[in-house]
Length: 179
Image (cartoon, rainbow, N blue to C red; front, side, top):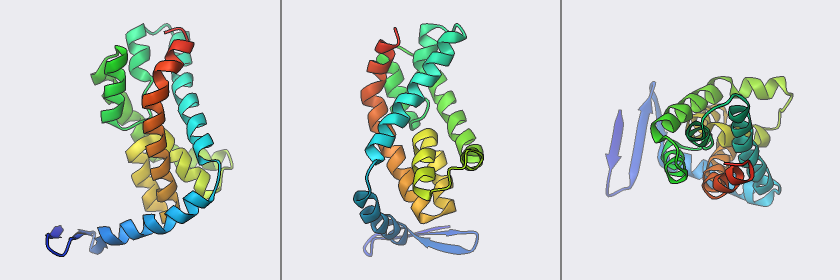
């Protein structure tokens, strides 16, 4: 159930008997902002995540003999659907294929992402959150928020950075890789 009070600017969601105030969720992200801004390496991690995310899927698709259109459609797989479809369309890919791939990647990351990070012994909540947000966009970020505030804040950062960087860098990465 959702309650909205327009004058008091209160939006509350009742989920499984728990009341969640969006102002409280916003406060948690604001509290994490100081932590995010005070630490270094996030932009580097975001750039690396973007480059590896795009280049790895392009290289694998090229090795498997995929068509140019298909490869372009796979390139923006780790960003939210609207950004991915725009990037794909601008580069000459198939937006509907991109949308399906983005949904699949997000679900895979939300279901298996934290397990994969655990297997690789990545235990730092900042690294886990940033990785999940970068690789699994909004679906992974929502899973990170379930795990905790720090995970969610860093996943949100990863989601935003990867969206911006993929939109800017994907055309250059594809050009470098011969497409």
